Amino acid sequence: MSTRPDHGAELLARPEYTPAAICLALVRIAPHRLDELEKHKEEVLAAAIRTGKIGHLQHWLAHWAAQVEIERRPDLSARRSHALATIHGTADRNDPAFRSAMDELQAVEHTAARAVSA
Image 1 (cartoon, one colour):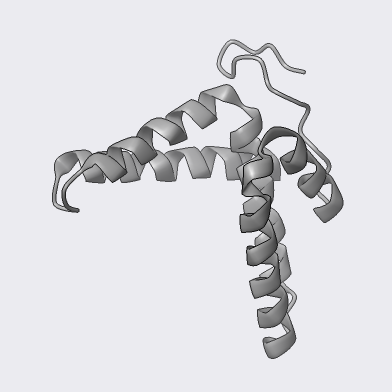
Image 2 (cartoon, helix red, strand yellow; image 1 turned 180 degrees about the vertical axis):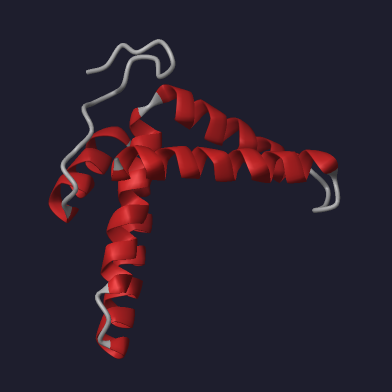
């Protein structure tokens, strides 16, 4: 477990980059997201079978590794929660707060994806 000042105390160590490890980590830190993970997995499996391309599965693993990274790091989780609250609290997409929150959400996703791909 890290105690890096920029992360806060991570909720668990970064899991291995495998479907089983990512799923187990999600069970531990964000079990409320398991249905979302399973639905997404079914969609990408169907797409992979339909197109014959493994890239769909690779994308799924990368996406969920990043989601686990966000969930396990309080700094990223708090930033995402705040951005989502702002997005849902704005009246329309032309609101400057909406655009700013979308940019923050994208930055959180990018930070997580970069962390798990390093």
